[in-house]
Image (cartoon, rainbow, N blue to C red; front, side, top):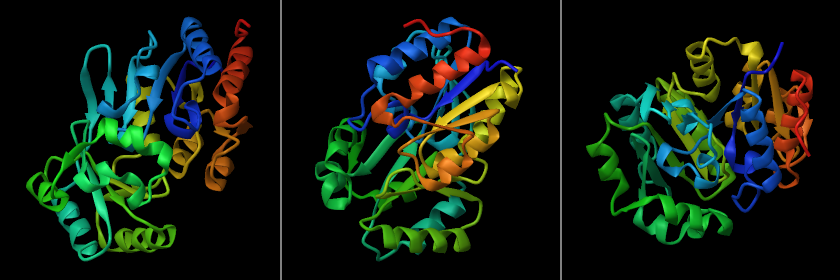
Length: 282
């Protein structure tokens, strides 16, 4: 069966380690679009954090954002599906992190907010130095994130808990899974524990989008690198993991392609176009 839709994770998959889109990956995406394939962004990023290098490509119409908490029709400028965190879950997240050395990112209708101190010095909170421009260029600094979250507890697309160690993240993950109801928890970045409504997830969002487009899962291809992509890769008719992907993501994939720094997305799209009978032009 022909692939008619491709869902692309962005960071560390479609984008290189510096957060940019390579010429070869862009060319492959454009060729897929010209062959009639729908390209959908499938990202942990919020709507307002999506990179211009990708979003400026003509023909990219749909975006799965915030790990599946929202699905957008970019051409029409409308949200097609959205799940907000339940207020009780938000209160429980704050309760079980009270007194811990963490801070937060919070998202409302695609707009990202973060603790002012974290925005000013992300590395101090566990972020990689190369993430500084992205964090400082997208997050709206907020003096007191706990108060902000309480004030907007019924409006949140999702919450990221910013942690300073992998060990603590694993412990907190287990605690929140046990103590907080109606949440979907994942992680795509070492310093973040990403929490959204239980109905979120890139796989459930992709299922919605495929139905909306009148397609079947066999007509969907997915690309990813992290824990938050594994469900998408399992759901898709064919799932591609880049070589730098996590063990869980690689195990969920049907094919492993080159790393994000070696144009693995272009390699995977080449394969799709050959299967579809439309080789990408060199």
